[in-house]
Length: 471
Image (cartoon, rainbow, N blue to C red):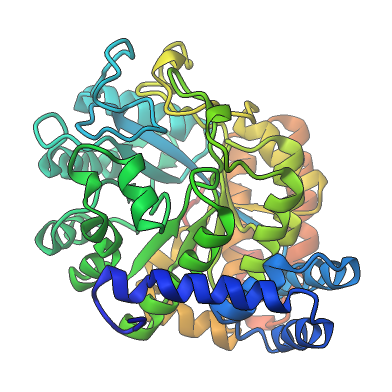
């Protein structure tokens, strides 16, 4: 029986409720009075239920779709302005004991080069990332209790935070590792992680078990209930996502929103981020053999409806997507993107020479400077901010500031000051020129006079070599 407050996976992600929701959406997708009523509801920026969002997902009326995209653009601007947070993934190890049928790291793949970074190799990777200008990383690691025990991850986090090279520093480490115990999540919290990220892949239990035939990841309940254990372990911010293309997108879209509703109902705060990766080719994985791929147009629609359904949640798109696709979904709701990503173990310090160990094909191969330049040309503010995490504005404290609108007093100033750091320390001359123009224009528009004066003072201090100012 469906119960969003339950801690049992099959009750808060209820198969029958998803089927009922999709039947309701199918019956009402052409009910334009209802569709427009649901769209009107998004004016309050309070989000939508999974059932309401499903109706919009299945609706094909062009006028309604135009309204959905317009609302998504407006809500994105309301909460995130023109800021885009930048990050990079860092792959520690591709040793894995699971049998996932869509991932080249699966245990039966005997020809992919297996590698695990030493702490010295991690140091080289981090320096390479710092020299690009990155301040925020997402750690990635296969599931292997022998080669990749939690102690290795904890040691790696400590190493990353310890490295200060020139003006570089990694200020926030998010972690994407396999589902684990409450005790282990406490250890990750104590290590100072930002967000704990875990993709569900698919919420359809039967399909999930087929896609994960062997290994600890086969356990659907253990995996699906991981976010609850993470929050019980003291981790305030969690990041969800599905891998679109593995299962029917309608089913997973509803499941994703039900998971968000569950976290809100039980813990008082929904997911800090939602990622929307699509299945890609990799080593011995041919994405075309999976029958549930989604088009670019449908992908954009999913992003837009997620934005209006969960307005307070950051939406992430990676370099799996092309420049063209990323440009479109940024407009409709994405607030975080990766830049200059390498999906191989050791891919930064060695210049990406080991791409045969990549987890997936990268579609956007530009340098971080090129991505920053592109965003500036589009009128966005590339942000390297990590201030909320470092100031303790996490979990419900962060969400309350977002919902009240007070977060604006922090986000724009912090985005501008971290962009100034990038411009002075890492940018090409052309990118620096665009960045300084953007900073001057946006700083002058800060409505709070006291905050505005403080920002200008800090920007001036940064000309003299000072760094790491934050609100």
